[in-house]
Image (cartoon, rainbow, N blue to C red; front, top):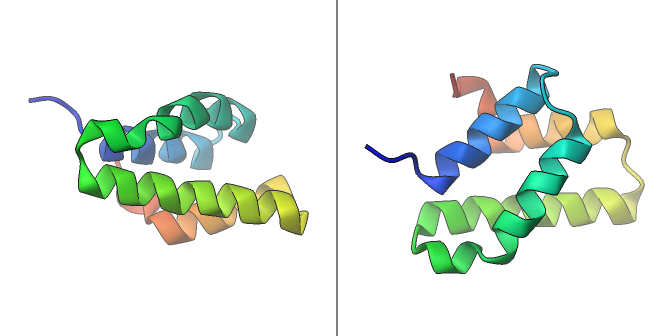
Length: 83
């Protein structure tokens, strides 16, 4: 069984939440993925990627700290349930 892109995104966010991946590393992995997300044909993955893109943009324009961004991502993406 193949892993969906949605699950891959959630796993990467979980790695950030646990301190095993920096937000910079997440962004470096996520941005190219999200640029072509519509081609995935996975509606839930597309929705999640757009949501995260919006949060990253809001954090950048709002001057959020790394911790604030991480907390918002964790809360809104429900990554605490990913194992």
